[in-house]
Length: 89
Image (cartoon, rainbow, N blue to C red; front, side, top):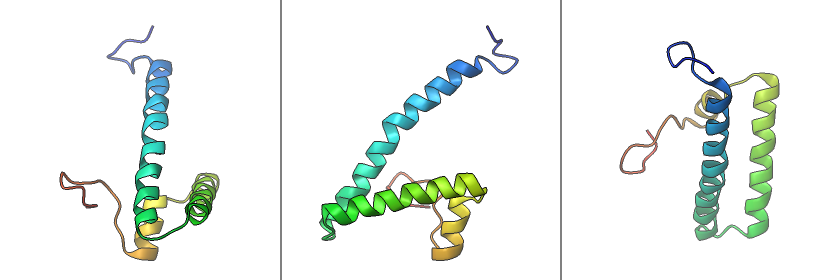
């Protein structure tokens, strides 16, 4: 068992992080899908965009480029965190 003063239990931490990811990511995608639907996108268009975004994620991991930095450079949108009003800051 790892000491909390020497890195803790890395396996437990990794499992906890994975459970957070599995909880949050689908909900983030759902909120984006809802917004796109309200903008008039079809279900097929939304699913295609999600598939494309997942491929971009795999590319960024495989090729070692930073998704946040890329989006900022390409679009000018800085996606670092959300403030209390829900706006991207």
